[in-house]
Length: 180
Image (cartoon, rainbow, N blue to C red; front, side, top):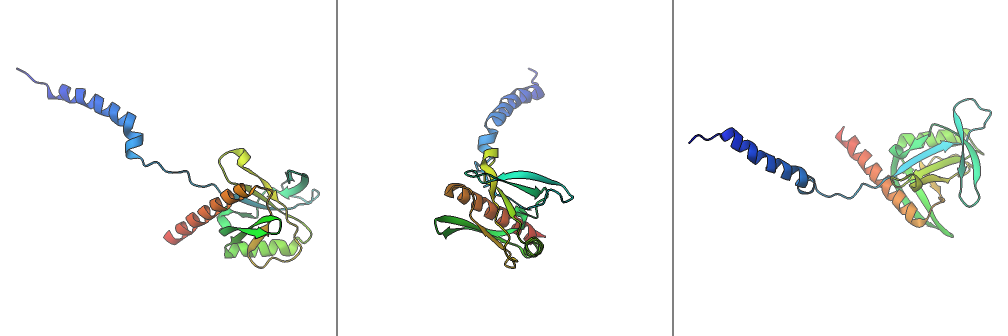
């Protein structure tokens, strides 16, 4: 009796391959919760007559205010060391602490732009509706503390998600710097 081992192996290979394809995702990959999203863009108010790229955005949902801003942000989530929610009279505030070089940049921009606004965009989820222009605090003095504290136009739950996402990004950035 002649026996063809190659053909026999191919017959076994097909069901094993199908089983691996169908069950491979569940068997070989751990189910992991999605990483929190924390996006931050801090822009500076720009006068429309100034040269350079700018755009007009709307801040605040209850009483919208149009503000003309530079298109390039001066600070992003990559500059964040930590974020936290603070209790404030009548609600809460968000405090964002920046790394040293970003703190210097914040100091420079607040020094040369008194009377203008810092315009803050935040996103805390994957969907477009999970992000918006949150605040436009007025620059009244030089900021030498490398922190930015403001009351966001967001619910407490949205702010918690955002702060959690910013801290997650800050932790990942710190780990990446440690590996270098």
